[in-house]
Image 1: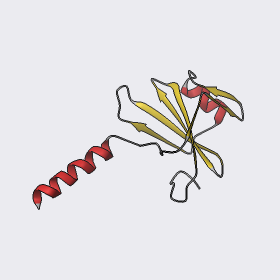
Image 2: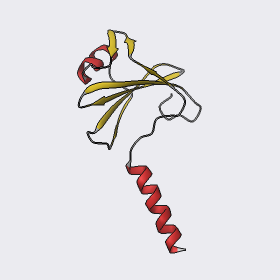
Image 3: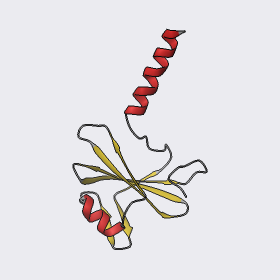
Image 4: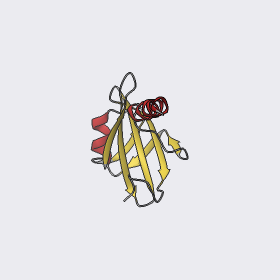
Length: 105
């Protein structure tokens, strides 16, 4: 019993510590038109914030180098994840809001 509890705790810790996981069904983009300009792969974090505004939330992945994720909700039905490595935009990922999604209001 203790062995199973220990294994379960270790598995939970591994998945918890590896950081956020993207929803499985979504769309990748090379660029996204924000209110103040076109955010594109290769842009710096501050440039994206200047174009798109403050995100609703920020997260990170514990990878090397660390990955910073700005999370935006520009409309009621979609959430956008802007992923940065070394402060450079490397991925824009859009998902439909689901009923249980904590990023959808």
